Length: 389
Image 1 (spheres, rainbow, N blue to C red):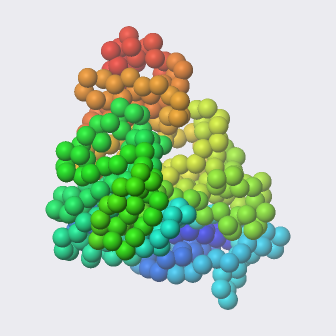
Image 2: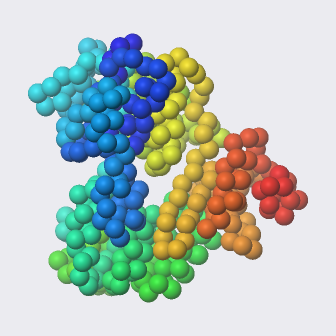
Image 3: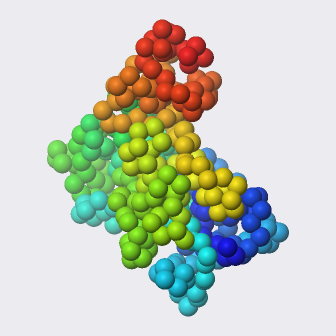
């Protein structure tokens, strides 16, 4: 194998290139990114960057790094198609040949079919964040469509800067896809205590020049509307190339497609959950970088193990750092400790642990979930102390 092409220059794609060099790969590496400029971090865009505006702090590696590691970065370039038979990638007027192709195409913001949705701003790219930050330099009435991580992180920053904020969430609770009802309630109270108005179970039915309208008939006046209604995976290239797609590009436990020359990582990959075997897609920097390391070791012959890392997630909202270890299902029950840590269970098995400003329990949970299954009876006997099981 001499030539590796990576489509997608986010943290996962960059990690794949770095890991290949660290693992001793000596062939050519081409990293193709749709956005102009050097690869950068996305998570701070809805948090630290909105406050500081320090674009330099987002940069993952300087230009000199790519030169020293002999990684060819092709920036600001959209890939048009993949020719699997010839093993070539076509991008505008350029063609890149590969022995192995890694798809790290990520996701894009979901745009629900709401009248006037084009009037709302996004928070996905560095350019989006810069536009929002510029808008927040004067008093604003902000309406946020969506009560997930990104919408709530923006809401917390905007409130801390003194702006009026209203969050409209179609689901009956905040962060419903990611956390337990108990954690949802805790963050609802926190945001309302900050002065943010939150509407739950009331979908947005229109975006107007002067705000938004809800299905209940409520009209919310706003100078700025942020669309934070979730994301969808970028699978168009994979679909056109004939790869299996089902809410993401389908891969096996080693992140390999049915084409042995194509691997997939990060937010666009659907792979078997190591704990349950069910297909999952994780929107997480941790998953993307872990995927990249595993693919690199497989390609360089250093390891051939299936992906088995414990998922973990975080969200910084005001002075609350939410951390989640593991992956709970929609029907998992929960038990909340007196200090607020919430334990999720799939039947008898511990599936996830949610904590707020409790790094110790979070790290203990990640370590313990990486081993043999933790049973509810054992946790109960230990007083829900992760150190005791």
